[in-house]
Length: 136
Image 1 (tube, rainbow, N blue to C red):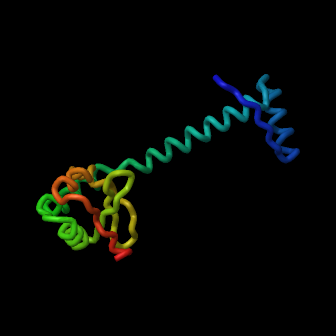
Image 2 (tube, rainbow, N blue to C red; image 1 turned 135 degrees about the horizontal axis):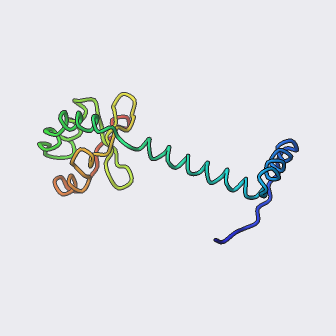
Image 3 (cartoon, one colour; image 1 turned 120 degrees about the vertical axis):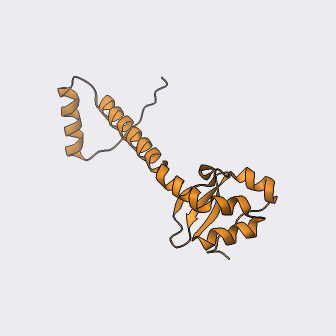
């Protein structure tokens, strides 16, 4: 592993506490700081992934509600109108489409989760994108 030297300034009481802990564990201050950072980054990464997981019950409900309209839409404008009728709009996000609530703008899921990827819509409707009702 490639290591680098990093200097940090801590309040005196915290520096003493970390030093005492390192002595107690027969380790080093560097090892304690490294362990704390690794644990913090791992917790942050896993909490981020958990928040990105969409409840399968929500996906099922949205599929039942929106599938027919997504399948029968004839162009981007028609799709926008159909989604707004249900209180939703779509936005391009990271190369795909995401579904949002019209009232709060909260992202619910990606349209690919519902069985309709951005590429599917591009093949059907050609270049373009859904309109965000808050910018129209």
